[in-house]
Image 1 (cartoon, rainbow, N blue to C red):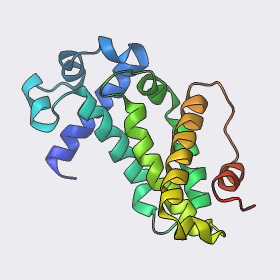
Image 2 (image 1 turned 135 degrees about the vertical axis):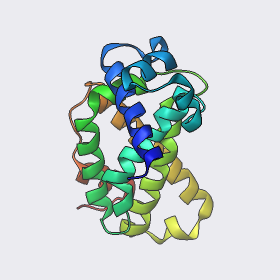
Image 3 (image 1 turned 90 degrees about the vertical axis):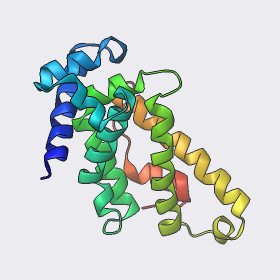
Image 4 (image 1 turned 180 degrees about the horizontal axis):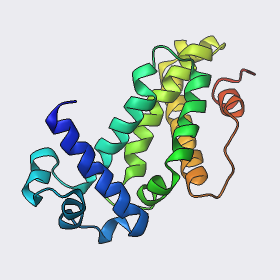
Length: 177
């Protein structure tokens, strides 16, 4: 592991630990770096702000767990892995989904969901209309990306139980798994 990656992971671990105890808005860079045991200025060598740190944690963790395997797993397996990942990291993501404003995690997460939905539709769709009509395809992907993001948010915030991936797959593709 490269030294900069080790440093980023130390910073991320400290940030995640703090998020278990405090709200996102109440955490400062000084708090993060004190817990990480690293000089404050080092944070800015790696991240612009805690929003970029938040995005990096999501990308890095998800990449290790799921995205690196995107070409090797089915859309159905991808949904299962996605919900298992969020189940393991619920306490961290409940805080991130609560962030509102310009740099909120939810908006960023919708973009990720677009990639997931696109893979599922390409893989499972049996209706030629999805592929032939680009306007409808774009609408369909956007609609289901927002729906998936909201379902994940509700699951993480404990307001719904873990959804069955085959139900989600059916909703997106009209295909029973």
